[in-house]
Amino acid sequence: MPKFGLTMTEGTVTNWLKAVDEPVSKGEPLLEVETEKITNVVETPADGILKEQLAVVGEVYPVGAVLGVIE
Image (cartoon, rainbow, N blue to C red; front, top):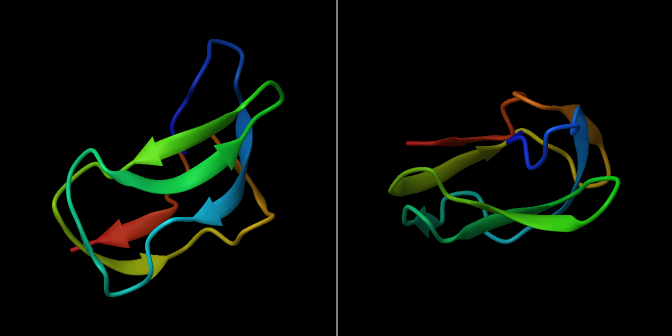
């Protein structure tokens, strides 16, 4: 879970924009996270294939939590 603001401590995953086993490219939208103030798009950190979606839509995760696995 990336930190989108100075006071952000957690976020809620609201939507995965890529499916498991789908190719992804660095910088493209991967998932959406809602914070207290706004909904943010998390960009893919690297090129590869999304192998796991560890974060469940609707669940709250702390900043720094691993949300997915890219190979």
